[in-house]
Length: 226
View 1: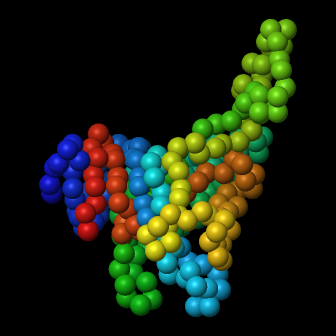
View 2 (view 1 turned 180 degrees about the vertical axis):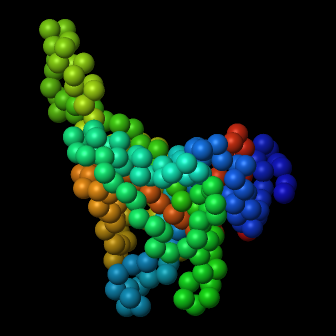
């Protein structure tokens, strides 16, 4: 482990050991992430861009949960179901792959080929969007005579949005516009989540540690060097 310019340089093995350590979690820990992931395109080997495109994720803020006292994901989904006027009866299923390290967000997995990999389960930090925000976007003007209505609109959550982080793409290491990528698959949805509408869904992502280039948590910034 090497510290330079207030950044701690660590290997991915050291990152895995850190994320496996329950003492690194306080129930919920906030983390900043940079990642670079390989993009699988449609068209198979006939696609001339296949194997050459990378997706760059910068400055995303996520939550890492220990889940020591239950499923944080399940609790979040049920709170949003209540905001939609639906019964809070969502029960998350068990992991369909991999094994979670107890009281952490770390998941290990060995695939059918016997290849082992470390993952971390993240929940993206989102901002609640209320009816007043929606009215403002639509150009609806309210005045002081609408004070009671405004207070009611503030309390009604109509969706969640991710305002942190940005995504860009590389082709052979050089920037490329998203619309110029051949065979780019549409963004996947976020599952059924107990019947939540798409705009209300909790965003869960479980990246491989090999894709992470930077993580900031517990007051420290770590740069992954291998």
